[in-house]
Amino acid sequence: MEVSRVTSQPNETIAAGAWLRVDTLAEFLRCARAGVLASERTWDDEPETPQSNLDFLPAYDLAAIERELNAGMNRLWRYSALALCAPMWTALLYVAGVHFLLVLLAAWFTALPAWLVFRQLCAVVTLALRRRQATRAGKCEPDETSTAFQPVNWWGLLKAGFDSVKYDELRDEALRLEGRPWRVLRRGSLRIPVVKARRLDAEGMLPIECIAKVAAFGRLLTVCDGGTVAYGVVLVGNAYDGVTVPFTAKSEQWIIDCLEQTREKLDLFGDPSVMPAPPPAAACAFCPLGSPPVPLSVGGQQTRHTSSPADGPLPRSRCGARFGWTPPHRRARALSDA
Image 1 (cartoon, one colour):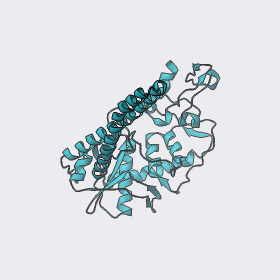
Image 2 (cartoon, rainbow, N blue to C red):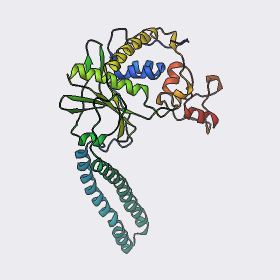
Image 3 (spheres, rainbow, N blue to C red):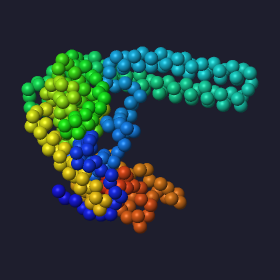
Image 4 (cartoon, helix red, strand yellow):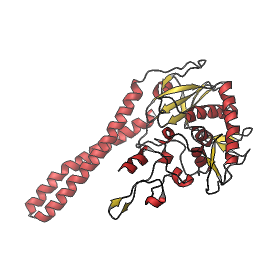
């Protein structure tokens, strides 16, 4: 295992044999530096899965989508009626001869309802499209005995009789492993862990951390829930299409071995003078931990993203601030070229 020795802040790491979260384990498989950051993260305050820009709208529950769509249509009609009243208010003020007040109130009564109508219309269209995808999806029944990846659709799985359930923390006392899957699909004794990936990797393959999560949650569901886990499902981005990842005795043993290796790394990086070596540049290009914040303006000029504090103000990402470097994130490269 390659490491680099530099001066850093002490890492209050998880000692060997202590409880380890599934997300920390998965992040170590993706990048050792991401794993160290995950081990220092306060999980009670942050979600374990990527959030959608439209999280205020239901997306994966058809009944909730239809309820919100009906409520949204009612709001849209009310806002539209309010917008249609704006010309009437304008006419009344014009007849009254209050021309200055006419301009101000006409602008207000026109702009505000129009903005509300536009915002609500976007929400209604989004919900209508989601309902259309849900109702038009065909039944999806993956082969439980297959060891190959199989394409699946979220709505198709629900039409096949699976129930979507949110689980609380799952804890394996023997492995001292804990975590919470995004969703679990249940049908009879079958348990299907569902995880989400931000995107595919540079080669168009599933990220290794998602495969690790399926294996880890498969183990947790087998031990904690007593169900049968034949495979897990990975949904990519905010879409409904995904792929199955087989869960076998071999993958269960693989995740147990990875767990032991991760604890060894955490114990090693507990030394404040030891940190993981930088990952390949391609691994940092889209990593959210390496994305720098919005650069500050100094004297009316936008600061450049530099590699040394001596070169000027340095906007630091979480990874950059923790390990004292500038990750080669695509946004960092764009700022350095500006």
